[in-house]
Image (cartoon, rainbow, N blue to C red; front, side, top):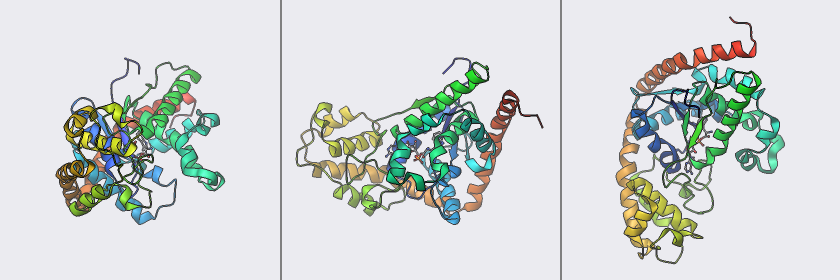
Length: 338
Ligand code: TYM
């Protein structure tokens, strides 16, 4: 990132159902302290959710649900702009321009598309393939410099850097766009499934027991931890002991992130203990930290008019930043000005 750009934090989340602990620990929780340090924009990326089929009503409800999760998780709508991506047309307009800058070869390397499409590539939407280009537009419509995301989004933010660099070079506007930095933070940047320590915790896993949903009630939270897969050994005393033990590593990472300590510190607390004892402490901590977020989410979701008003205010603030940047981009690429 060049020093000439003012720092601006941008991140986003898809309004797909089942917002889970990975979304909270890998993203939202890390956004909270940034709000006091830099201008922050947190978008609900509803256009990204259209890349796979979603019922229109579900999309609308989920957009409000994610906004509620942001606020209940600690995002202050007075400090940070919260808004739906589709409400600011600059995202879509810039995405088109960037799709003419990005190369097909670059998109072909995106591992998430390969994972999501599997063998069914030909049947996927064009949007799913072009998805990272829209993500680059999200960030760069605001000249975002810092992008706090979970580990799975690192490659997409790196693509946004490549697009920014190529745009600056192609149009001979050195330094017009900053090169955004992915910020992968904390001991839970990649929370894994509770059923399989080698698979990512994900909204789309058919097994509800694979993930902790932010809307799970306390009994369910406890049951899911109790049933989480483990191995027969006691917990190790040091980090090296977690190698080749993905389930232990995952649960210790979750504990550490919730307790705001490192994995090494968590191991100094639990090293030598059986999983059964550790799981009791983990379940208790989970209820203590996630319970209040869930209750606040539900309270916020019951007042749709209030959420819609906050999203509208966020939209206005976002547009005030993005529109002048888009205007300059249109001049740079040679569109006749309106
Ligand atoms: P999405 O909606 O899949 O996930 C939202 C955020 O949650 C993180 N995350 C995880 N972190 C740790 N462990 C997990 N198991 C886990 N699963 C998800 C993601 O890394 C992400 O930070 N393409 C993005 C949304 C997006 C975006 C953007 C992000 C669109 N435009 C611009 C940043 C900047 C996505 O689908 O995230």
